[in-house]
Structure formats: structure tokens, C-alpha cells
Length: 148
Image (cartoon, rainbow, N blue to C red):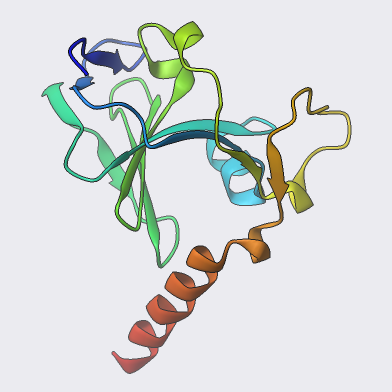
């Protein structure tokens, strides 16, 4: 991909770019995402870790679970990045051109979907417990914590 994907926070103190196409773009409804982002869902644009470069500023991170951390702007509070396993996911709304990046992955965490938040597409829908990668990584992380 030749054209960079650019984005950043509300106050413009954090900027990022990547030169690779997203791995997937999916919508998450889990209760933790709802609380973290103050919305009914969060649309993530995911890249393999190491493909996203911060060109201005750096996010502050909050370890939200044993398997993930969430980065935000320490100045304006904008959610910037979600690090999970080997993925760096940014929010479609924080991209400079969000209209270009239509979801192509799935709807995940639908067990927590707010009933009036209607899904208007044919993407697959999964409960969090159906995500085998999530379950395996979560169990392994919890085991590591118990060992310490």
C-alpha cells in the first residue's frame, strides 16, 4: 500500500500513521469496550503489532485486563489504541478519513449489544465466548498471574 493511513486524537497532540492495509475492521460490543469508550460499540481498525508509528506524541496506557491495554491521549482523553495479543487497533473515528474504512470483519461481543443498537449489515456476529483466540489467551494470562 503506498498511501499512508493517518489519524490522531482530538487535540492533535498525538498523531500516527501506517503504510499497511488493515488486517480487519470490526465492531465490538463487549461491556468493557462500552465502558471504556462511553458508547454502545467500538469500531476497531486492526494492524499487526509494529505497523503503526506514532509521529507526534505518545499515548498513555491503561492495562484494562490481563490480556489487553488501552492507550489514550493524556491531554484530551481521546481513546487512541487498543493493544491485544499481536494486534494494534485504532478507532475508525480517529482516522483522518474514516469514511474510507468500512467494517469488513465481524461483530464481536454481541451478548452485550444494546438492543436498540441495530446491526444493518451481513457481517458475522459472535459472542465473546465464541472467540477461541480470546479464550485461550485469557486463560493463559490468568494462569501466569496466579504463578506470580
